[in-house]
Image (cartoon, rainbow, N blue to C red):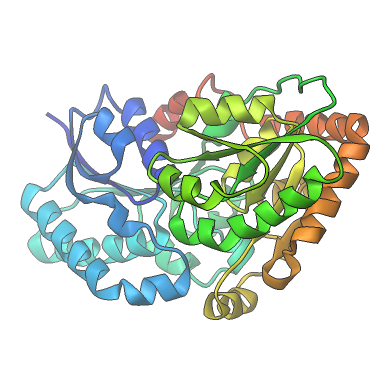
Amino acid sequence: MAHAFILAGEVSGDKLAASLMRAQSQTITKWTGVGGPAMVAEGLESIANYEALHIIGVWDALLSYRRLKQLLNHIVTTICETRPEVIYTVDSKGFSLKLAQILRAKMKEQGWSAPIIHMVAPTIWAYGAGRKDIFAEAFDEMLCLFPQEAPLWDDTNLKTHFIGHPAAYQATIPSRPNDDICQLLLLPGSRKSEIEACLPTFLTAVAQLSSRFECEVTIATTEAMAPLLTQIVENQAISISIVTGRESFQQAVGASHLMMAASGTVTLETALSGLPGVTAYRLNWLTTLIMKQRFKLADPILPNILLGKPLYPFFLNQDAKAEVLAQQLTQMWEDYPNVIAHHQKDAKQLQEMLTGEHASFEEAIYQALSH
């Protein structure tokens, strides 16, 4: 019975890891590790709460150091006691790297070995090659979601495979509602700190928009964050619907004209559906300072990076003013037929870029790991 250890620490990582588990279901019959509900549904025996790895920025990491170290020690001990045939880490790059490094040393010390395979490449194209060599030494293989990533490792011994992005395999480009009422979707993030930082600005922008044209507002969020959002929006002058769950999110994306989003992976999904909008984010001063020093690109929005143009205008911290967001969306609404045509064309280009020759994301993973 083949046994694998697998780790993922974010909501997005949980879904990616679940896809990997499905892709390897004929090869791996026992899964232990750290993961969320999607992984548990695929048969994961979880040894710790994956929410312990939900970290945003340097400040959160510093505050969580002791807890993360205890979790790391627990995971290493479990792996060394059970000795799985293969170890997978999914995203959570800093934690995954530390885990792989310690395991390398422990396996050598104890006289056993297992391949360590990472999914989701570090963004050395955005942050520079500072971690490139240590990643190449720590892992045996890596599965890359974006086409520009795999070639960057050709000068190392790390085997890399481009598998595409699951959102691109699943993407559809719906026809937008044909009416005079603007359906506006708010995507303020999946974490409490993001919502509290971004949503008040979004709501002020909504109030300004509603004075210019008729709009109906929906917020898509996780079930865990729905009570917080309900509390925040209950005194708003305009009625706001709150929806939760993957299916409701996809329905809301398909039924909306415009969106406002906190930057994140969600912008790739909205871009793949051809939904226009704006993005904004707020960080504490320490994380902002470090990001400015480390981040090599002017724009952190993934669809913008992939397409090489500002598909979604992005505003950070003091630039993320409600009046600026409202003005951007007003301009889009006033020229909507042209705006939506351009976004749908870009959506098709993104989908072609992020899918390979395979019929599904799981098939792409299976083929990559079979070589």
